[in-house]
Length: 155
Image (cartoon, rainbow, N blue to C red; front, top):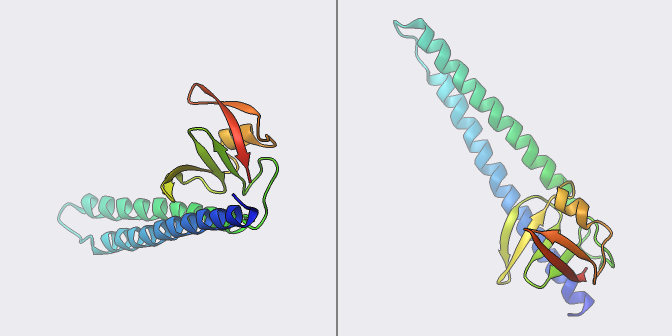
């Protein structure tokens, strides 16, 4: 694989991550609106406590979704700072790591994604595995899922 192909692949990884996070942000905004609507539509009844409890539950849900929205925005901001036009010699934020049976991309914690018919684990730079991989080079070994893996390529 040429350096241009490596850069193009990392750019696709970043674009995929951006699309996933953007979708999560949109879904969270809808959930916030729904929670606000639920809190606002709670009507007074003869059981006054029910009204207050319903409004409080709606507001708690809205607060929870608002925190999620802030986390998604922070993750998107972190992803957007990742350089895809650099081919790295060792593992760092923005690096793609290829092993025999696993592949990792250190940019945002999005879990396992299918990219170009390949399973890629998107890791947050703060994730324990990402910190374990930091500064490793091709030929280095590490433990993952109780298996010893060798890094075949980093870029």
